[in-house]
Image (tube, rainbow, N blue to C red; front, side, top):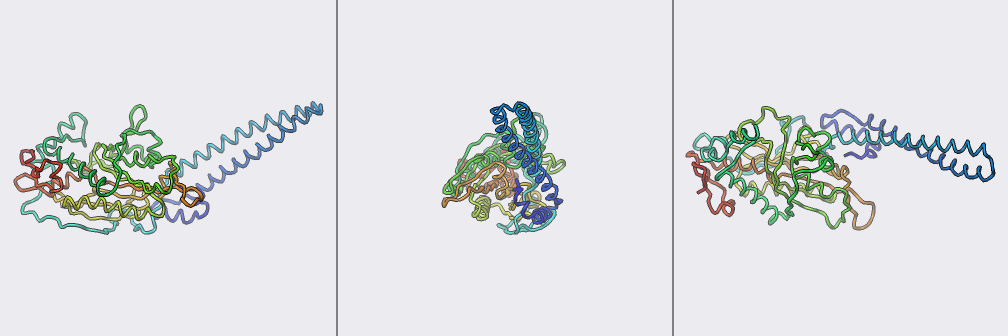
Length: 430
């Protein structure tokens, strides 16, 4: 959510920042609506003052026996009361319109975000690891013999439709082990607080984390109004909604492993093979609530947390900063981490780490009280995948595959797999 006062102060700068995203200027329309809203508020306040004065005069007229003046003033009070109610209702409607328009405008990009129109303009900032030189043509994950034994798309389609999968045997255990490895690393090494959250949320939580009203089609809603979370960013971030935090409590760093749901409304025809793009998937999320002065530093720390997981798993990756035209709606800066998938001979996104500044905090009224006193300030919120479990599974399987259909697994998973680090061609761990 944007601050209309900041737009009033420098509308040209606001429009210029939006234009970097490829969005049309909107400040003129916003300020016209804001002016009409403020005019109605002022008119209502003026009429209210006139009503109050007339109410006092009614008593005076009654006391001196001036019946005609009494009746005139009583009629005036009634007229002003109706006028105040009408103007307040009109002001409330204009305020709702302004709030709705502000809620549909994307966050402004940070100054250091590269300009660009799409993913081709993203800028690589880091690369780790060397892709393995295979002595055979590497397969995509679902084509590996041992994986195919435990990755069943047909049965999932029978029960749920396309873009679902049933995991079994060793593949299911590796998937579970990866999630546990991520959580343990975040808690034990990265200092995040593990949190178990609901996967059903109300409108307010989706709105406060900028998923509504603009992106309702991208998520699933139950018949009684709950939303299935697209990521636990929603539940973790919204946990501070309406709160007045103490500065000393910041930063708040949380992590959660949840099932996530996305309709993939805009992805028709994309990644239809395998489990790269699913309606239901699992993710370990990171969320930080910080002081505004520390949010940029916090984003870099979160990025290293996610990168460190891939390094521990031995997965080559590259990190890019997204250009203005490729960033998500609520982000002011986003880093994507892309894991190397030898089956596709390409780097594919496995994590996004974003800072929203105070964009979400304004929507959900999350503030903190400065230690030295002074006016309360909005917190900054950040979120990042640490990591997408299914996509990490794909990366582990494809990078560890062998010509005979087996898969050699990363050493760090040994404690979670009973010491078994080979997925056999029969789908079992050995």
